Image 1 (cartoon, rainbow, N blue to C red):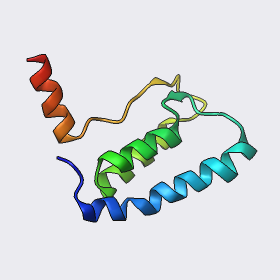
Image 2 (image 1 turned 30 degrees about the vertical axis):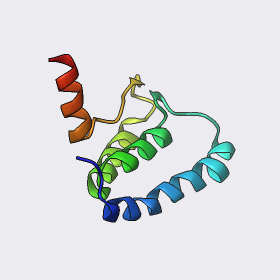
Image 3 (image 1 turned 90 degrees about the vertical axis):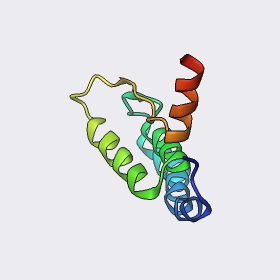
Length: 92
């Protein structure tokens, strides 16, 4: 299901915070993410495609897993319901 206008507006707050982090804080810390896409890219995609609470859960869970004991790797944002249905139609 595509995000309605309410969720798009609500999700602008964390999107702006993530962009601030990427522009001003991340350059000071240097690259350290073990995943692709990076945690900040993952969070942006989550907030662009899911409602606030689900995107927040996905982002927090991803950041928890991004640690020195994790091997990392490819970990995309789960598809939204609309994209998932479209993909199933294309494959089936």
